[in-house]
Amino acid sequence: MQPQIQTMDYKRIVAVTGLPGLYEAISSKGDGAVVRSLDDQSTKFVSSRVHNLSHLESIEVYTTRENVSLADVFTAMKNSQTSLPDAKDNKAVKQYFEAVYPDLDFDRVYSSDMKKMVKWYEVLEKNNVDYTAKPEEEQAVEEPVTETVATEEPAPKKTKSKVKATAEAKEETVATEEKPKKTARKKKTEE
Image (cartoon, rainbow, N blue to C red; front, top):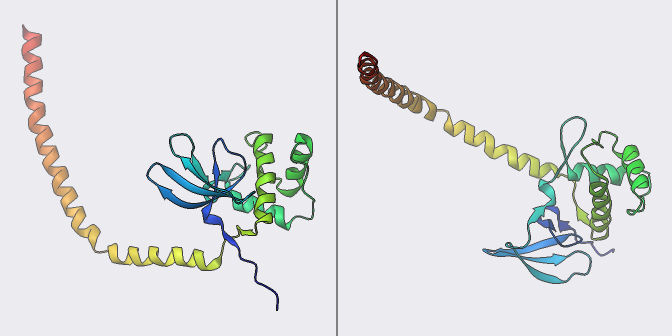
């Protein structure tokens, strides 16, 4: 019986401005957050006055088509048979992404960004972080939307009549306000 390898939740993985590497957000406070480094497992408090946290799941990458999530690029890197380049070699990193993800917009994705993606990918793989989308999560997101839409159908009928009444009231107010302005202009031009 093999021991089961525990995976970290990709939703909790963040990049912290001004600090190298990736972190797991443990808890948040009003003035910052407590994070754990994925490199050395040290825990520290990062102040929101000094640092910004960027959740990896919210980062998008420019492509020649529509933007894609960073997880999509990581998935392509994982599925590729091409070995990872040395993150210090700009030319090798660009050639790697040209082979692995040719839709990347190389005019807007800088070599520093590509280097960061290579480093982050290595850290995620080392820490067994599952960044692939799970079908259960996609279904869970879709189900409440259909329920919400079904419960909101009768509401627009009431709001439409209120909107019409409000619009008519505004038109009457505007019409009465415009008349005095017109007469005031006539008096000024006559004098």
